Length: 202
Ligand SMILES: [Zn+2]
Image 1: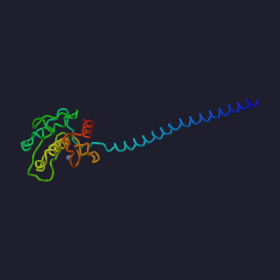
Image 2: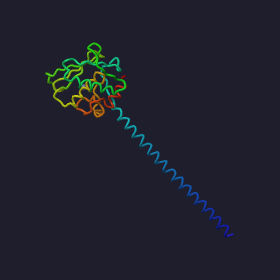
Image 3: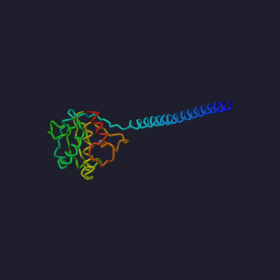
Image 4: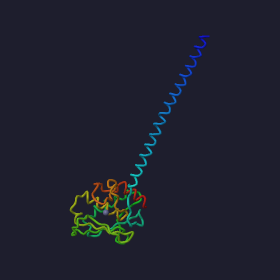
């Protein structure tokens, strides 16, 4: 009888032990779930912050639109001809965009026309002026001839970007755009933000 009771107590005790064990197991199982939940909320908060940051990742447009992006003709007037090689090579860097094909044309079929005004020393390398919404004049000034070839090349890419319809990028995107309002990236080609802009436009 005593043994029986003892066994019974043992049984009860074992059962309690089991229960305790089960509870402990459940607690252990719950812990990773809690950690997961916390981790998920951290990731969610981070992605919200990152998305808010992405908002500034944006090219800007001006009023220009070339009518046939896959057939953009450019013409270099005699005044810009000393830099014809540079102009052709770096204007055509925009051909790295799937939507754009730039080739040389005539005065009548070209939508981007190049001029040189090397007597003007206004501290500006070049300027892109709209003739109408599809046609632009690009003029290079004295500073263009005086600067390094790297900056000259990047200036050509930048001005052609204006003629294709890109305005200056937000300063936050300076490192990923040739359309920065000031300074150079020393990369004379359309960068990721510029390509995204051209893709969105055409
Ligand atoms: Zn500009």
